[in-house]
Image: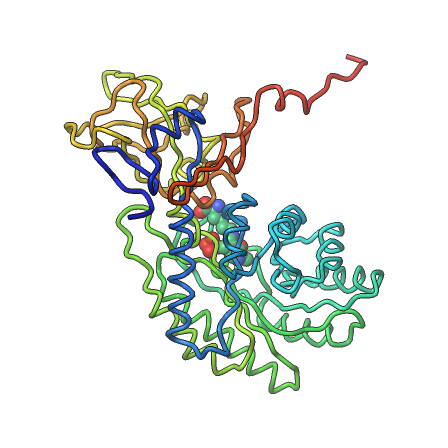
Length: 422
Ligand code: LLP
């Protein structure tokens, strides 16, 4: 058995007991399961293999904003993934992990000069264009560098995919994408440019898309626009159908990969384009936990608080999106249930991982895990309250490795300086 499993009353990741990890590396720390990442990648790949012919398989471009650790990137690269990036930093990490330019697509919003030039230097597969001036810039810098860049235009389909409002991206009031009308103009403009080649369209409705049926009208709008572009004489060879797959945080249903794959088969496949996908959370979300220790149990007239050593700076999702994360003790699962507010030590009332959560009774120094923290966990961590970033640990079977050693206070303070005129 692999992944996060209980053995003899102790939570393990694969063959490694979480208390051993806490003892060796301290808490809080992120712990990831390579086997879960492999299983997620394989499940998506196999669903696509069941639905689409062998010579029309999509390029699965892992959206690495979800978890940018280089070891995780390497793992996905060895599995055969491509990469979706949104910054120069992500590009550099991807290259370091072994991805080649032809496996990388850039979907960033507001691409800056340095990033565009670095992407051109790396000969990436394509730039997904978010705005007219971005297109002008890609063409300008490509001309300076004597390159020709593939561009695709992101369609804003004016669809809402559930999830939290802050991670919906496909509504007309969102900053992302271009209207179908604008794309018709931009495609023509790009064709007249010397250093870009318009090759297709992209779409990304949002993240943790809970109403998965919204993918279908999204695909239909994409396909309709491909038809219009072709009728106007344009060449369309690439369709990027985005990411946004939901993972299980609480009691959500598992994404029906086969239903999704069939929408791809029925709507996108007939377009005869190279198909690309950008899953982020799906690959890594359920593959990680934030391991933390109970510092105190504080009881007030109205609440029982578990005060963890982890805080909102380590995992901001509950604070930022009111996101639900499962929380469970690492041992003692059969203890009587108790209701707690589970909080961190940061000086904000919003530093709460869970409110009124019923879990087995926990005592001072007990370990707990905050589950499904592999995506947008460490990636969004900060130094708020001058707290160091936690380490990240990867487990695969019997193998354990520190894939990010975290920070020391000395390193943190070493970045700052007092001017001599103070
Ligand atoms: N493609 C584009 C263009 C994106 O903007 C995103 C995510 C993805 C792909 C990957 O989406 P996924 O498959 O992971 O849903 N911090 C938030 C999520 C922000 C997602 C941003 N864009 C959270 O913790 O829920």
